[in-house]
Each structure stands twice: as C-alpha cells, then as structure tokens.
Image (tube, rainbow, N blue to C red; front, side, top):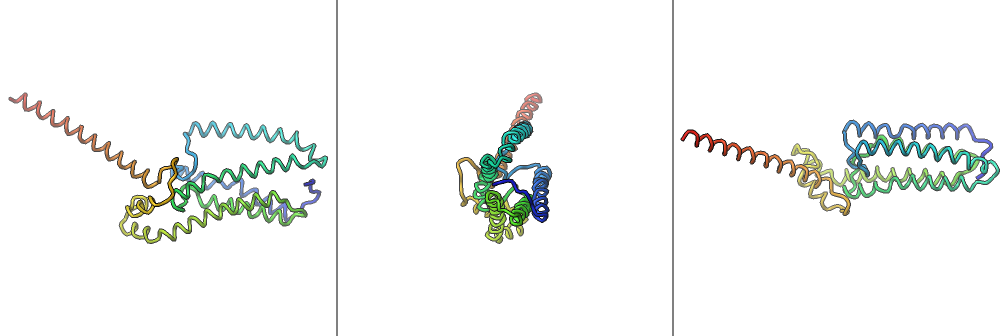
Length: 245
C-alpha cells in the first residue's frame, strides 16, 4: 500500500483513542495481579527475577529491531516499495494472535471458566480494537491487514467474555448451593466433581485438584508434626517415670 497523503481528521481521532486505550490496557491486569499476589489462570508462571530479566531483554531487543527497521524500510517505502512493510505487518499480526494461543487451553481446563484474566483489561483491549477498526473504516483507503488483525483481536476477546457467561449460566445452581453451604466454589465437593469432568491436558493440573493436593500436603505435614510432637512427649514422660523409679 502506498503512503497515504491525506488522513481524515476523524480517522486520526479514532486511531488516537484506540492507541491510548492500548497503552493503558494492561493497568487493570497488573493491578489485579499485584492485589491478589497471584498469576493463576495466566499461561506462563516464572520467578520474579526471570520475568524482570526477560522484560528488560525484550524491551532492548524490540527497541533495536524498531530502530533497524526504520533505517531499512522507510527509504524503500517512500520509493513505493511496500512489501517490506506488509511483511512486518503480517509478522506483527501473527505474533499478536499467537499470544492468545495458551488462553483457550486454560479456559478449557476449567470448563469455560475464566480465571486470572481481568475483565477490565479485556474491555479496554476490545475497545482499542474497535476504535482502531473505526479509524480504518473512515480512512480514504482500507488497510486489509489492519482489519484482519483488529477483527481477530476483538473476536477472540469477545469469545472469552462469552465463555465466562456460559460458565456462569451452567454453574449457577452449584454456585448457589456452595454459597448456602458458606463454602468457596473451589472447595465445594460438587464443584470439584463437576470440574473433574472437564478437558484434561497432560501438561496441566485441574485447579480444584491442585488446590486439594495442596491442602492434603498441608494436612499431612500438620499430622506428621503432631505425631512427632506426641512421640517426643511420650518419650519424655517415660524418661521422667524412669527417673522417679
């Protein structure tokens, strides 16, 4: 696509709104993870040091790639050669969509329940895609690649909303009984049994089972500690009786 010589004001405004929304989209997700001190439901779970080093490395790498592409592609683009820009756009679209690949596995593992993903983040991200699509629609020429990328992004996030809605509908009676029993949904036996009937993957452990295993290990450790204490107490009592004799 040749460089656009004129972009309508409304397209600029809509595109700017979409860009601003995408700049702040992760704020609700970061705040949620910080508040809950948990990344459960999110695909990758790394140590703080690993995550920090990876983030710094990616920032440096992307900054270098961006700078290199400016000097390599811009001259050709202004001469009317557009395929390098299209290639970069295709790669960007593929990388963007590939980021969503682990999400369906996490959702299927929980039989449609969305865990860990902040719906504020999803809403802002979806609105960013919507305003970007509107910006393309009001331009003098249509960017097909942009339409495909923004549409896929909005469709995937809409699917996440729908999945959570269906899960809420299917589990409404179980959640109601768990509430009457004053028990968290994850700890409610009926909910755990319902969860066990979901999809299972070799590389994942169902949430309910993982939490149950954690509780069992904690109980075993407590029992072992109590037994050790009792044995020590018995030995001490026997020693005291021996001294008295």
